[in-house]
Image 1 (cartoon, rainbow, N blue to C red):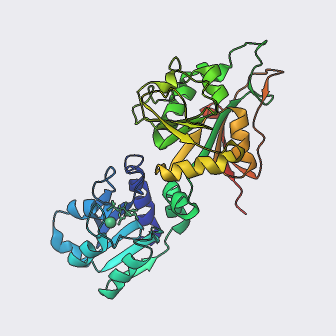
Image 2: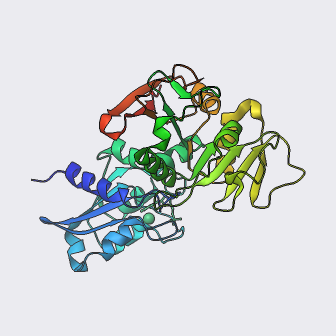
Image 3: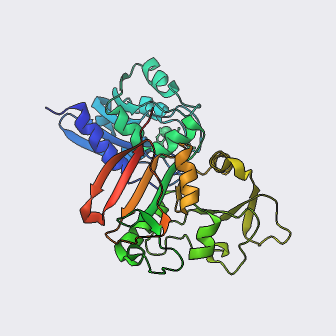
Amino acid sequence: MHTHEQFMYRALFIAQKGLPAAMPNPSVGAVIFHKDTIIGEGSTSAFGGSHAEINAINSVKNKELLKESTIYVTLEPCSHYGKTPPCADLIVKMQIPNVVIGCVDSYAEVAGKGIEKLKNAGVNVIVGILEKECINSNKRFFTFIQKKRPYIILKWAESADGFIAPTEKNDQKPVWISNNYSRQLTHKWRSEEMGILVGTKTVLDDNPSLTTRDFVGKNPVRIYLDANHKIDTSFAITNSESKTICLCAEFPLNPIDQIIYKKIDFNDLPAEVNRICVEENIQSIIIEGGSQTLQQFMDTELWDEARVFKSDAILKEGIKAVELKNAVQFSSQKIQNNILTYYKNQK
Ligand code: AOF
Ligand code: ZN
């Protein structure tokens, strides 16, 4: 006998394929089960494309079988006319008698109306199978809608003795930065988020491009802090490789062509960054330094995940690494260069 959980796990697995291309739309997985066979599957297409239910239904060869099937979906089928017609209507039209849903959609246009539509049409509906996992599979989407801020990932590398970088006089290059594996992984991580943010000092010291050049993936929107316009066109972050936003205290006298300038209050940095992200529809950001910027987010509790490369190197002195607060350690995988993942310990 199969359980609802087994099919929902499969739907969750399929849903992963849709990210990051579907963002800021959530990625959903749909599995259609008939008697003892899975007859159709689908995930959300790239942003603006079709929803998971349509893709799954389209993949079924014999549409007659739908009338005796169960469709498993990780998210409540939509009830609104967005870029596509409502999935709930399609399910009713195809006469699928059973719908098993992972979690309710918080998006105001849907928010239970999809379930209502199905029930009103006489469909059997079960809600809440692997609910936590389904919400987590679209953590960026749910954070953005429910908390009105982006999902925030803090990322840094630190030495075994807790330094984020050597001091200037001790100009030893940190070993993890030259490591191919960690660099590629960092670029993969960048491709998974809609935005990437760094402070002024990081741009001045490291001259980063903040692109995904070592991984096939989309460049996130670059956001850099530059209160007093110290960063000129000699820095890679100002090139035209991706959309770039400069957060400043006053608009510049000589703006750089391709940069979008946003005035913010630097006394309230995390809240201001969130405001700009909401304005620009940036659903998630990865913050890659420096330590001061990272610490400000950590201290105000406006963060969701911290990914820390822990090196074996001993630096003895340098810039102190970020102090973790309210964090639960999630994983320590030696095989992955000692990457530690923390999640905020929700109150
Ligand atoms: C579904 N199945 O696979 C996804 C859903 O602009 P649209 O038409 O693409 O609609 C976007 C909204 O639809 C999005 O905010 C979310 O509420 C829901 N996403 N719904 O039935 C899917 N991705
Ligand atoms: Zn839909």
